[in-house]
Image 1 (spheres, rainbow, N blue to C red):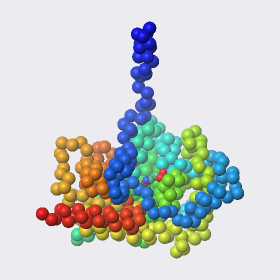
Image 2: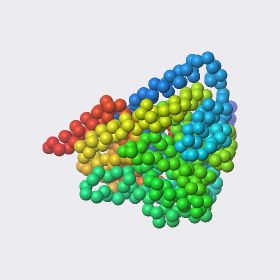
Image 3: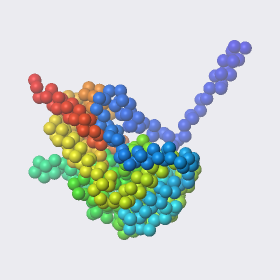
Image 4: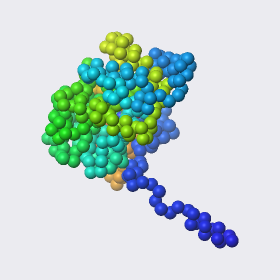
Length: 438
Ligand code: PMP
């Protein structure tokens, strides 16, 4: 009897593969790995992109009112494609920015963060055999999201050019080669992903660069998935230009945004898509068959936040004016600390990230030519374990084939309290002293 039970239990054990083919090759995730490392070892975390300062009071108050006010229906489901007050104000706001008359019900859809908006786009538009152009370095989820949809990512790098007369490098020194970009478009190209301002480099694409991309999209009848989550975080008087506003682009562009980045509330996970109904109708189909509905109270509070910003647009009290001002100071502070320590920073024109060159630190963390792991990844792990400072390796933002071409930079997030940035500066300073003293 015992033998029979054993045989049965062996038979009952599943032996066939359980995962779907679309999961093959997409199981590793840089954030899972580096967030864990930072939590275990870091004393100063400039790794993952989130502010450690509080969100604005008006937004917290709006959430409190939504939670404890009289309208108890805010605790129940709302409209699947976006809470009406939120889609209405988003349509008004983006309508003004784009010079378009937007219908809140068909030109805007709310998502669970920009992440879900991206996922919906790739699922809605990409088929087996379709190619999607991704500009490197890129926010890492684009690649697995394209492959999970059955598409093929085609990568084109931004190429750095050393600045003249010993000036510090800027994210503007990283440029697309127009002939190289044009060579990636063909009859299989379905879409291009544009991320301006760009994570991790902080590049804000110029009018000329956007026109180049737009002309190619129009010429080859290609969609543009425009990830603009850092749209308000631009510095030094630079302007964020929306590619959807260029000739021929509105009809083929989906704009993606995030309240997480806009109002410093990454944990709320409220995002949106804005675009023509002929594109958004398919995003709605994807959404209704997966997530269906996003948290009502958070949408209500974000709607209130946008109402306020609509009234104060361009005025000194606007959060969209104040936040970049504050962040520019933080950027300059981190740039100075890194430069003083010999970790050459690339000055970002936008976002709350910057890259720093670690070439001068090879003596502390020697290269290992026999390792498959890119140098910057080993360096970032060593730094968090030995110095308590967390950052993200740039190679994480490249496809496998190109990782080793860009493996001597690490990305720091500077959306941090003054005290956090000071602590990072102290670590770097001490490290420099240890390096220079015999
Ligand atoms: N796109 C980019 C470029 C990002 O950096 C992020 C967040 N790091 C997202 C999308 C995802 O945004 P959310 O948190 O709203 O999902």
